[in-house]
Image 1 (spheres, rainbow, N blue to C red):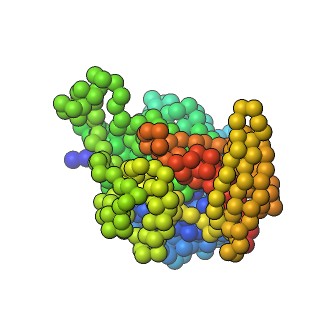
Image 2 (image 1 turned 120 degrees about the horizontal axis):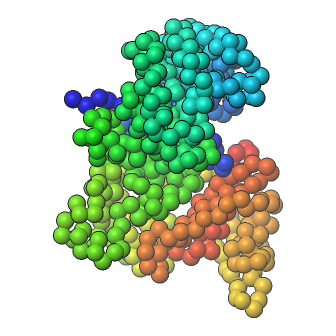
Length: 503
């Protein structure tokens, strides 16, 4: 009989630490509700002490999202723990997650403490958290670079103080699978107090080994894995939830482990996180990348046509990727659109449906056929759209290799049309400059990504930008069959996020 591995999702906390991926309360709730539908065991909603907004977001998640444990992160100090409990007290299943560095480099360089005072600090923090909340997780930050004997002392002392979960993080992605698996095995052997305690791991991907290290840990006795959707997170990211889950499912005879994840929700969750956080998924990303189930080689295509198992070890449907051959056109009415949306799993309220329908017509007028991928892109952008201080109306471009590019853009604010023109190094730059003239603010473009949602000359273009406005990075996303328009819409979306955040 296989053993269960609990999935602790930290997309909303560690994943949100990606520059430009800051989420508001509504967006956090939306992702948390999808994570609950996905079937994760724990949702780490945020770091409540980091800001009043994050405290309120974690509080709202705890009050509105039922099923999973809702966790809030806290440093090993009373004020942080109090903030976490204020955010979590209304949750159906709350957990306070306390952390403190344990490696000598963290103790000496960051905390300016010796081992004994840090150990005392950890124990006091767990005891205090335990008085507020029954479920307390303790993380030994930078465990993979911590002296083993000292690590054992910290683990034993914090369990004795009341920790119900002990987390062993590879905080900087330094470990390799053999040694990390061995670390977990030796810990279980050396610290009998871990019997009956959830032993968790939290691996970063600095050397590309986060998933491998996590799997080595669960093979050696870890019972919880901390991970993120699409593997997003600080620096090179975290262990990828979808990869861990599908490895354990696909290689069940090897691991004899299972999760309670509803795998058919994986692709939907991946796309939602990508769009709301405006972090593109690389095409060759395992499980959820656009090329994960694509075959271009003639030999591969021949094998797939004869039996999909020749070159696919996972069925696309198992992760929620549905293949639909029927396409929509500008002549498709509301009934056909709603039928296709329902087939894709979208059940939209009338107001949201009308927004999607109007955007669908706008795209369909310029694109012969609307494929399922196009429609999903339209829906998800409309559903995650921020309040629009400025609405995109129209765009005109004059450009060529022997002239200075000129963009003229019309935006709408409070029902008033605002038109201006600007030049630039290229048509996209000219469009961005024009938007800045109209909104009266300047931005610094930090990142720009443009890709085709589907194949063909009339493919829907999807642009993602990160713009530094007033010292804060805001993300923006836009789509259109015209890539310059998609870019302009993305740039405007970033400014609308700035204005929404300023109110």
